[in-house]
Image 1 (cartoon, helix red, strand yellow):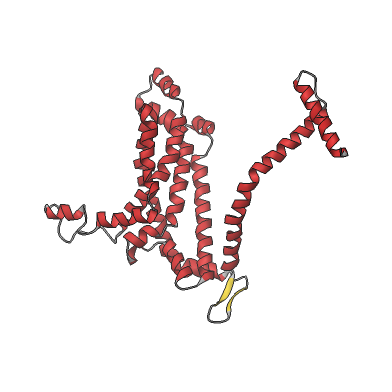
Image 2 (image 1 turned 180 degrees about the horizontal axis):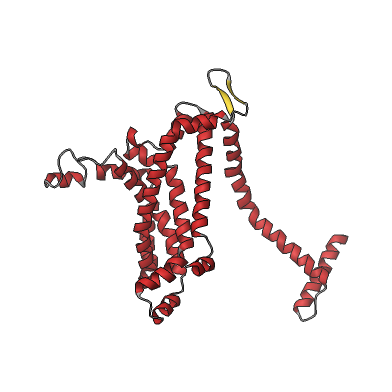
Length: 318
């Protein structure tokens, strides 16, 4: 038997002896701790490697591309530390960035207003129907994102299921129109991202100890006071997650504005898509992507600063 294996066997034997009542040697404890740390790294490795390949490497390539200059018809693009791409991309697309931020902010507020009461009721009052009701919220995930968006075209069309019926009844003028405008885009984003908002909210609300609410009522708090001082602060981590999961992807969305909007509702995601796939202006498209990503990171950090992520801290602050 090799010398290393004999040493490992001796250490394991000593550890087993410790479980039977005998105090294990200190060296055996160190050996077991080292083995546990290796197991932890082994569990972490697959996900870490996947993220490295699927996120870090593409991110490096995007940043690298954003610093290139030239053109496909003039010898191709070369890396030249062209930081001016960022200034050009921001100057030419600041209107679309502002519009994307506005639409996604409105959609995020609407999804919170719709999802919070729904998640609250399910978490506190649905009883044995919790799982069924929450499953119904997630049902739209089983349909393609694009198909769900196209369906709104039929609902909001001038002669569609909703407005066509109301016009036939004479409740709306014949020239009334919602499609191809900001309302349709925001409504589409709100609908598509509602499950992303509801999921973290429900998890946070369901984790709240219902006894705390009863204790607040025993101390003569009204239902509203119990909600404001107990439930709402303890749900802030879920609210933070819901804001990030809704606002960040909604800002970069281009499907809703493409399908439900018009040239007046173009968002920054459409601009990036056009520069990459139609104009082949890779450096400026990559620079715009990096600008958007940094902006989202700053906003997410601001959300974390305002709402925080620690239950006890927020509860105490309230």
